[in-house]
Image (tube, rainbow, N blue to C red; front, top):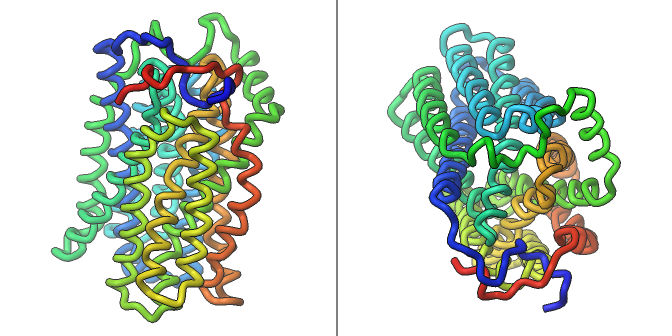
Length: 420
């Protein structure tokens, strides 16, 4: 390969990772999985909350917006917090907010029936989840550098599996009439306990990746945050992650509904179609690390974006149902790596990782805030299935951004240095 490769740099004869790094790897994986469990658990009980509060579609949309707003408010400051406190303490504090938010939202729906109380709980939950997202990605990138091979997509695969588990447990809770409050409080306790224990295995503070000198002043940290917002590479990575998040979020929010409305499927079949997408995402994030280490970010992401373009196009335009399902699987595979690799790229330079990941997260997560209503409005005009053609139309120009994800000052690394 050419000299500017995009694999994590490592010596040709890299020593095996230390026990501390392996423990941190496991701790980060647990943190991602439990964060996904919390999010999946909440979304699985949205229908029950809607019924308990007797909400119209518009009021439900406003309620769900509280969580997104909370997350977006957290992200501009969570990088500074991770830089100041370290990833472990930031994840712990953020997960306390996640647990409190889940508890308030669940009990608010079943005990008070108050829209305002549930919205406050969701805003707290969103704030904690957003702060945790930045800090655990910073820690994951640090672990990835010390391992000398790509692993970030597998952490995000853990998040996907956690969210699927949360949705499955939520379906069981609904099936057996477990009250929303009881269910979400139980999940909050499990998530908080597990995350606190997992964060204790994060990289030692002495070798932490915060990049924050002990004598750095709050003003200096704020200047570093503002400087990150003026860096062309960071902003372009953020734009790439924005499209990657939209590609994933469009399927999460609309794929089942689009196949039900546009292809006359039952609700169960629509859910199964979404399951095909999730399986594709999980397989891509698990196996994609091998491809990234072998060929590098630029060629692999170019290929996966191409898969997502073809897959989304087939999902919408194919005249045959089985061909459309194949398209959904390709869409999931193609969408699997953009978000996690974008986060890794934002954290390439360790000293600036917290603030840059924070900036990229803010830009990327606006897709989750604005994407659903925009697709909904478009769906009112052309139908929900055809509205999904926006996905390949946005992905095609994103191919021009892939090269910006190469690590700065990347060096040639021997393939043998990256063994899984």
